Image (tube, rainbow, N blue to C red):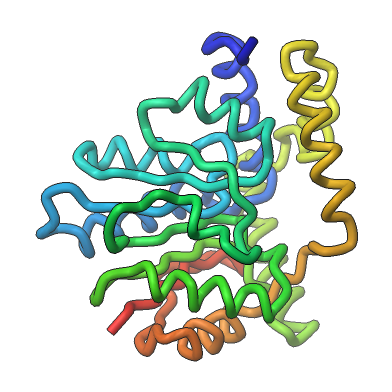
Length: 255
């Protein structure tokens, strides 16, 4: 038995509040990503969008609201978050279970044509540099000419002093907005694990995490590192379009 829409709504709304604990101006970052995509697909009747590391459908739902005619394929490897997305934001996207960066992951997407925009938010930082480069190369192959990859994430500078400065600015911004009082990541996951409706999904999640343990980490490459890898992958035009502290939206345009 799947998760009910009522239960999913509770957990997804709680997820939204939890994520505000970390993502500086999270809603504005979502809006900026949607602004970029809307501009790029302005002449497309039914744009095809790819949401990488979609979690419980937060970004997909916002994109679907802004662009109702868009076809959105949302990808994640977490069975808990995917089930919550299907139950709560089922109309926003088609959700695909795949491990971004692994060999053959794009083969299961069932895209049926070139992608207009590939988006991600707070998801790609766990990929080590070789896998991230390969992922950007794969995205370049999927995108139409003029299509974009839009990556919103935290990109701490390599310099310790600059990293401290950007982190401080982000914390100050979060404190002024009151979002630092939300529950944290670990509290959300501990609470969700106690829900009997989610228990079978947590069994799957633990099995997958055990298989991948030691293969992923929070690498947090700099924005410059990501731009360099995007250019190597074929995105010759790369630019940040928004930044607060170390939270940034980076866009690469395929020639």
